[in-house]
Length: 176
Length: 272
Image (cartoon, rainbow over all chains, first blue to last red):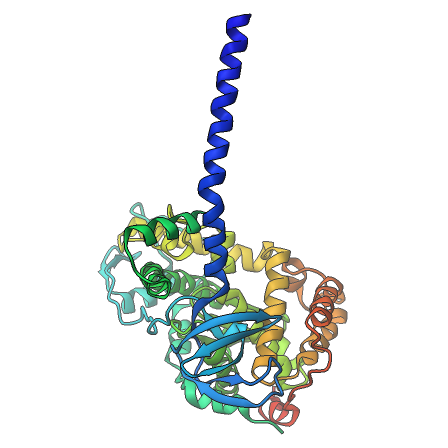
């Protein structure tokens, strides 16, 4: 019994030692994390995001920030973030900032992927979309994989529709 | 906590300033994200093809261009810059709108007939944009990789161009499609998309109240069964309005009134 209680107290001491070490190590880390969270680098997502004098939609526009501009977030107030860009300081809406650098547009439409269609022939993506659209993707035994219909031809029609981001931004700025 | 620990460890090991360190960390994170984006588009493309397998595409060029311009105008300012968004119209009286991962957004002719102005259309498209930007479907399918990243999770699962990878992709497409048509996203994600839609409307100068008006106008149609999928997959209109009203008062947005562009909307949609 005595042996058991000694063993227990040893275990308890070891436990406290672990807790104590954890607090000593993690406390400064928490402060550092908080310090980093306060001033974060952000990147402008949109084409010509307005930098405003005050956190209000009716406030004066100081300048327009281009896509990918690196900003330093200083403060958050509701839907707004105070940012520093070079010499300028102002407010942008939080949805206009990304916390990762802005990437180039991705497209998978030009990729050529070889696959087995229901006819058993290996086909390239463009042909694949047409074949699969009509007959459905099949496994090696020729069994249909999905119970749902697909229409890749309609999808390709949609993907061929022209779009122009700058023109569209102009289009939505129109007000009656 | 872990980030803090790593930060301290890193700053002791390599004497770089905090700003430079953040840039390096962001760069590493961004490279991983980028690798998964193509797979996310590939995944979403399959879901979009299934949506088009259920509802025929509406090919009126003028109307499609109009919807696309409104959607692209918003996504170019507030969407994910690495994505090319596609905005299509589905030829069905069922009132609804859908978003597939990777940038595919659809609105039905039934929904367009119910709308009264451009701000309402912008609100519906913004709601769907928010689902894509927040990767709600990907999160709900729990496609996380060992590094807990959502996009590289897709890349890990659907990493190859082999037949088995395509079969896995097809099965995930089915799960996502079922989620859109039957089960719906979580209430939290729908509330999040509604709130983000309001933010996008304010940011692009549209009238945020118009979005609430559209939601209210849905009510009798839901009761009459004209929005069967929507009633199955979304929280009730009262719940959505309540959450949005709280959001509006919390951020003092009551006084914001933007453009509605009713005339332009009617001009494009008159013959629908």
